[in-house]
Every structure is written in structure tokens, then in C-alpha cells.
Amino acid sequence: MAAPPPPPPANPFVYIDAAALHSVLPFPSLISHLRAGLPAFSAGIQCPHRVSFPLPTAPSASLLLMPSWSAHPSLPYLALKAVTSFPSNSPRLPSVHAAVS
Image (cartoon, rainbow, N blue to C red):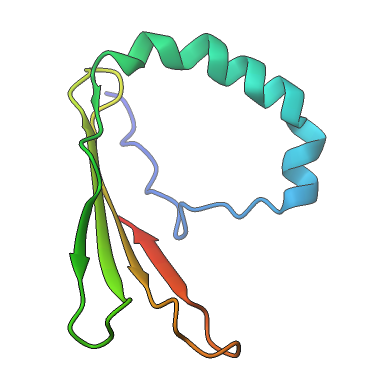
């Protein structure tokens, strides 16, 4: 009888800093890999137009929503990028905040 699989690692995420990433994947190599690999998946990727909502808290403020998904069997995902824009913020505060989930 086969032994049971080992338990998953306590922290499955690995942090790779910029220097380590650049040492194993220089930018020109990254671009060539993306150009070679992405066309195979691009037909199944959906990215509707960004939706913008004005916010009542400030005349120039807005909420931007950018959904994307893929039904490709090798790349199943659903993502949403949410951005808030407050161009009138003081120089001490960022005017744009974003999150992707």
C-alpha cells in the first residue's frame, strides 16, 4: 500500500524579490515568453469594458470596475480589478487605490 501524501507546507506562498526575479527571468526573456504563450489562451479570455461610477463624496472621484475571466481549461480564472480615484486628494494622500481579487 502506498504511503499517504505529505501534508501541504505551512506557507505555500513564496516571496521572490525583484533582484531574484530579474536574475532568473530577464525582462527581454519575459516578453518573448509572454508573446509565445499568451496567444494560445487569448481567444478564451474575456475583458469587458471598464465600468465607471461617479462617487457622491467628491465631484471628481470615481469607482472603476474591470472584470476579466477565462473559460480555457488550462487557464480557468475570474478576476476583478477595483480602482478608486480621488484626483483632488492632497499631495500627502494617494489619489488612486486599486485591488485585484
